[in-house]
Amino acid sequence: MADNIRLDGKVAIVTGGGRGLGRAMALALAEAGARVVAVDLVADNLARVEREAASLAGSDALTGVAADIRKAPDCRRAIDAAHARFGSLDILVNDAGLLPSYAYPGRFLEGAAPAKFWNLDDDVVQNVIDTNYVAHDRMTRYAVPHMIAKGWGRIVNVTTRLSTMNRSGGSPYGASKAALESLLGAYADETAHGGRIRVHIVDPGATRTRMRALAFPGEEPESVKPPEIVARAIVERLLGKAPTGDKFRVA
Ligand SMILES: NC(=O)c1ccc[n+]([C@@H]2O[C@H](COP(=O)([O-])OP(=O)(O)OC[C@H]3O[C@@H](n4cnc5c(N)ncnc54)[C@H](O)[C@@H]3O)[C@@H](O)[C@H]2O)c1
Image 1 (cartoon, rainbow, N blue to C red):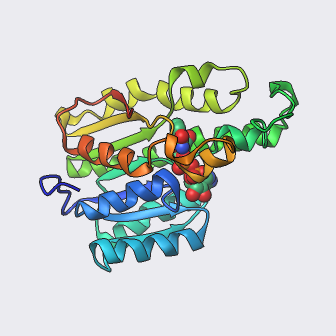
Image 2: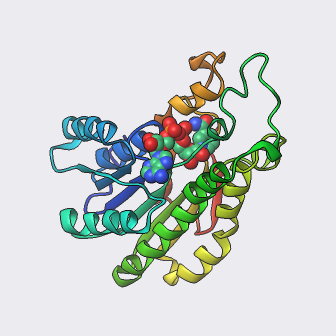
């Protein structure tokens, strides 16, 4: 991370911080000087990210909170951890997600039946909407009052491109991302606080993560970018001059 990108004194929460894009974002924030709470379902992955952050940025750089953000008390626990461990909450990265391969395991494998939305079970639809939309709206509602009290805040919502939201076989993943994105107007206008609180949407584009590999098993890993490129773009955005409410895509 470049020396001029510094987030010293800031405290960030990254959901999905145990692997993939969330892990890369959590480490990039820690390297830039922020104190980070990485939130994830998988405790073992969080323990690894804690070790990685400690060697990059010191033992007090990052703490993991094992939590299921579909559950309101777990979200409260994550917010409380930021205060208890680091005394603040300035940045929220809503990254955790259930991808289309969750709804349609093996859909990209040769011979797989084409995805049809009417074959989805109720609990699959509920899980995707709860994770990709309800949980992030909840985390944002819980986090914003702390940012308003401090007079500074940054929120990053990770969504996807418009064609993915609308494509055949994309239900309910596309709908969950479209719903999160549709809140941008309300989030940006209602929190603006004289420009001191900013909300950004990022479309990471195809990125080399475990979830991507599961969805596209035949793809050469080197043909898609590593998550560190997306993480760096987000950290730069947090300190850049882009106005609240913008959506940016990482090529
Ligand atoms: N990888 C891509 O190509 C790509 C492209 C566009 C958008 N995205 C978005 O980027 C985000 C991260 O994707 P990724 O590829 O890193 O996926 P990933 O599956 O590798 O990582 C997602 C992480 O979120 C965690 N998570 C899932 N549900 C959770 C819950 N209820 N509570 C807490 N943690 C939970 C998982 O345990 C996992 O560690 C997602 O929102 C995804 O929709 C990814």
